[in-house]
Image (cartoon, rainbow, N blue to C red):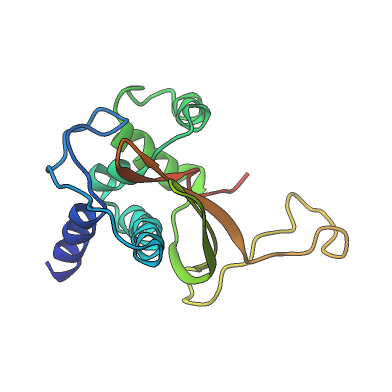
Length: 173
């Protein structure tokens, strides 16, 4: 219950109002202008919460923090042909179970506000063993030619006053 309350507070704090880009109604709240540092903290909280929600299977709430791009949503629809293409929570559920690693953020390595409505972060994820997740090498590649890495870049943007995460979880072929 404590985790759910935390997520609801973050959702309200980032100014979710009206309907999301994916068409799901959400509680109304207003994001008041605050100093840049506070905006960076809100964007970071949005990113971390998005991945916590996916990891915990709270897809209905997680999709309210996802902002595309449209090509990403189209990929989810293509990879999950048995799921109603308008059931975004179902698309994320299926994807997290079959194509993506929906891990929690272990550490935010860096974050910066690059414009009034755009924030960039580098994060590390927590693997299922509790340790930092390393990706690669892929598909039988030589680790000396394709060394494993643990840092992933994500962008959070403000769309119609609401903070949204661009991109999705880590794809695993």
